[in-house]
Amino acid sequence: MTEPVGLVVGTVAASPLQFSVGIAPDQFLQLDDVVVTDRPLPDGTVVRIAGVVTNVEAGHEGARYASDVFLIEQGALPAEVSEVAEVTVTRVEPEVYVPPRPGTPVRRASGTERDSALYFDTMAEARIPVGLGRDGQPVYVNFEFVDGTRGGHVSISGVSGIATKTSFATFLLHSIFNSGVLDREAHNTKALIFSVKGEDLLFLDYENSRLTHEFRAKYGLLGLPASSFRNVQVFAPPRPGDASGTPDVRARDRAVSPFYWTIAEFCEQELMPFVFADGEDERSQYTMLIGQVAARLRRDATKAGPDGAVTVRGVEARNGGPITTFGKLVGLIEDELTDEDTRRDWVPASTSIGSVNAFLRRLRSAVRPLSVIIRADLRDRGGRSLTTANAQVTVVDLHNLPDRAQRFVVGVSLRQEFRRKESAGSARPLMFIVLDELNKYAPREGDSPIKQILLDVAERGRSLGVILIGAQQTASEVERRIVANCSIRVAGRLDPAEASRPEYGYLPPMQRQRATLAKPGTMFVAQPDIPVPLAVEFPFPAWATRPAETGTWTGVDSGPAVPADPFATIPGAGADDPPPF
Image (cartoon, rainbow, N blue to C red; front, side, top):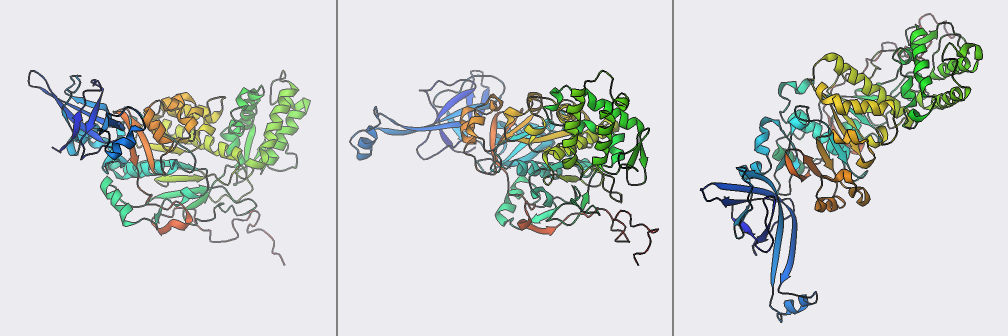
C-alpha cells in the first residue's frame, strides 16, 4: 500500500460520487491520477472508493484580497498554501454508496488497485492497450465493446493535422492484431483502410527509421511489438493516360495493384447510384431515374470481349462498336433519353423533360472524374478488383482522385464488403473499416447511397463482424445515429467551438478545455466500462508514415504478376497484329 498523498477535506462536502482531497505539502496530484480511499462501516465492512482526479486547485488560506499575495510572500501576513484535488469516483467495492469521511487518508493507486479502479481487472483477456496514462502505466479498452460482443465501432474526432486521428486508428489496429485478443483469428481478421490524404498510409509495412529506443520501450510497456504491419496490399487508381494501367502512386513500388471497374461490372452490379453519391442528390426530383437507368443497363448490357466492354441490346453506341469508356456509356444514355422515341424504353413516359435534363447534367459532370476508374479500354490482367482476400490490411489510395470519384470508390467498396460478410453467415473473422472524413461520407443533413451503407454498418455491422473505425474533424456534422452507435469515443485536439457542442458531452468540462490544448499523440478515450474518459498518449508509429521514414520493408508482395510479354498490357497489341515494317 502506497504512502498517502493527502486527506479527504471537510470544507467541501463529499458525496458517494465525488470528493475532494487536501494534498499534503510534500506531495502532488495531477489531472488523470487514480486515487483510492477506504470507508469503514459500523459492521466492520471496508468500502473501497476509487476515482480519477478531474481538477486540481491551489490557493492561499487566510488571504482575502488578490494583493494579499505580496504581503504573504514578504512574511507580513500569515497564510497557508493549500492544494485541493477534485476526484470523480469510478468504482465502489462493495457497492455500498457512502461518501468518504473527512480526514480519511487518500493514496495514489498502483498495481492491482489501479486495475480495479479503472475496471481493467474485469476485462480479463479482452483488454487491448491504447496508450500510456499520465502515470506512465498502460491504459486499456475493453475489446468486447469493439468487436460486437457488447458494443461496437470507434469514433475519433479532432482537428486535421494536429489530432493524429489516422495515426491513432492505425495504432489501434496494430494493438488489436498483436495484443492477443483475437487469439487464433488474428491471421484471418481483415482491415480495409481508405487513404484520402496523401500517401502517408501507404507505408504500413515499412519499419519506421525514426523509431528510437525510447519509443520502442513504450511499446514494451504496452506489451506490443515495435514493428510494422506484416501483410499489406495497396490498391491505387490507374495513372491517367497510361495505357498499361500503372497504379498512380509515386513513393511506393511494392505490393501495389491498380483498381478500376469495367463497364460490364458497372452495368451488372448496378453501380449507377454511386455516381450520384453527393448528399444533396437524394433530395432532387430526378433521383427516381437513377434506379430505372441502372435497371435497364443491368438487363440489356451484354459483355463484349475479355476486357469488360459492353453492348446494350437494342441500342447502338454513338461511335459504333462496343462501349469501352465511361464517356461513351454516358453518351449512349444521353442519346437515348433525349430522343422522344427511345426515352420511353428507359424511363416512364410521364417523366418530365426537366427531370431528364437534370439527370443528364449530373451524369455528364461525372465523366471526367470517373473515367479513370470506370473503363474497359485496358487489357484485363486480373488482380485489379478491390478485394480484402489477399492481405490482412488492404489500403485503398484515393488521394489522387477527385472528390466525386472518392465517394464512388468508398460507396461501392463498402457495399461489396458488407454484402460479402452478410453472405458469409458468420461474424468471425472480423472486418475493420477505417474511414477518415466521416462527416463528408455520412453528413448529418441529406441522404446518399454511401450514408445508407454507413448507417447499415453502424446499426447492423457489429452483428455481422463489420466494425467501423471512423474519423472526422467535427462529430457534430456526422449523422447522429452513426455516432450514437459507436461504443468507443476518442477525441484528440479539438477546435474550441467544436468542443462546446453536445456531441462531446462525454467529456467533463475540464477535459473539454484540455482537448483544445492537447498535443499530437494525446487522446481522450471514453468507453462504457469507465465513467470518466481517460487521457492517453499512444506511442510514435513503428511503421513509416511518410517516404522519409521508410526503413526495412517487412511486407509480402502479392501484387499482379509481371507479364512475360511487356507489350501485352497495351490494348490492341495482340499476336495477330501486322508487323510495323
